[in-house]
Length: 477
Image 1 (cartoon, helix red, strand yellow):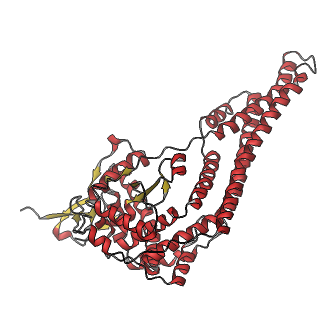
Image 2: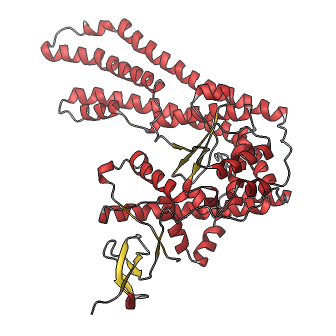
Image 3: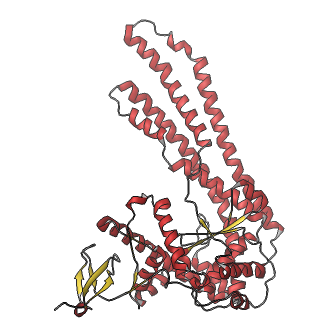
């Protein structure tokens, strides 16, 4: 007689296990990750059933907004301060360009003024000739390599990012009504495009670089893991924060310049390329004189990056204070819209989800290494790990949130400082809609599966033929 069986996920790696009904509650080693797991039945998170809007209408969303908010006025002193910081940050690449010119001039000066070394110290035969060539050519080679390397860094291109999935307003009428009403309430410009990705974040950015910078062409990227873990009130608070940046106008543009320059410094300092590899290979030669010359060239490259690192930290330090003030200013918009209590709840929730996200990626990599299988819905996979957190674990994560102080090097205020400011103003908010944030989407599960696959190929670099997915299971029926 055949035993009745059921299925359930491994509590560690999420792999689907099949077992007899009488085994429910037993603890066994998972055949995939080899970790102990308790057997429990689960319901499949099907794309057509999971995260589907429960009949939410645009009228219901609009009616959840009770009034408008006066657009905050930015002080002239604040804008002048941000302008001064931007000019100071722009001077740093100019200073670096001056160092490039100095290196090029030094190389040229050596090549023209020290040619006599090739004819000095006559005699010595072949070894004497090699010695004279080494004395003149060695520093010349180092100067040329250093100058070309420093010039190359000026044209370092930004790394390619995955193409986000842009939403069609006709397919997501409730979500766009929600976003549009937040803009109207805050008197902020409506983004020209809303993108979705697999980040635990929402952000305000310019759509296509410099041209969007000049036109004010804004885009709102939304991370689906954030949506999966938030309710509508918390998502409104986060989006309102980003629209607070939209309202900053000149401040947002100047901070964009500061961030781009700092990002360029970081990229050219820490990212290695084919030039670094070539120098490493030349240093492994058995010829002593080549090793010495290449060693000096590598020393020059290291020194140029050291200078860049110093400039980067100077730019970072002078920009951090005003960028933190911009974050506080954007917080004020989100607190006015969603209220102080919702602001604190979403801040705590985001802190917990960031830790859950780390655990989710650890289990994803572990499961892929063992079974070559990936969850077909990463936001649901993260939500499943969030469900596994006990009350004690969740409280411990929330209690550690306020331990991180705001330092002079911080681009964002600490969670504790932001919550304290929210409590001080005691805003009740003008929006309230107690539904999961996923209810704002027409079919969140299907969208999440599409974004998940793009995340695997574009962000994680997994080749399409290597992607084999399995359904994500929830422990709560």
